[in-house]
Image (cartoon, rainbow, N blue to C red; front, side, top):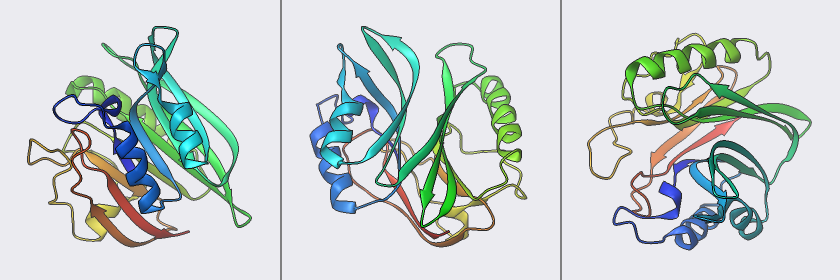
Length: 215
């Protein structure tokens, strides 16, 4: 699952974190990439709260300083996290980053990457270039997901598979107010894609997206 949770608020800025956590628990996803999540005194210790409620392992990339903590992206999973790597991305306004965790699943190592790209095209191009270079260095199976803030990704098709396109669902919007797809889950070509869906729950300004895969 990839989900921009809008700092735990819905489209009308009403608190929705508890409902988001309940939704994630009900879906029983094994790998969850979250964008716009907080771990600070101003907006709440959402990473800790989600980790405790989901009873999962977690990794957090603190991209922006807020209060006594940070705002950024996170990954939650019941699988063992072997390694965590936070790569800052070239940013002109809000600092962006790539979070990469290495999981151990049935004796198989899997890289899981999560990101939230910038708002301007020029900024995204530099960020995408750095991410593509990083991904090209990975020799093991991987997932790459996140809010890319664009309907045109520019990813090289030889690097990975777009799970939405693989299931012929790339026309589905991932935003509540716009007919636009800006959230994605990609996988390395060694991974088999079984299913992809955009779930129409209105707990954020984005819809969560989910993919079913075989490593």
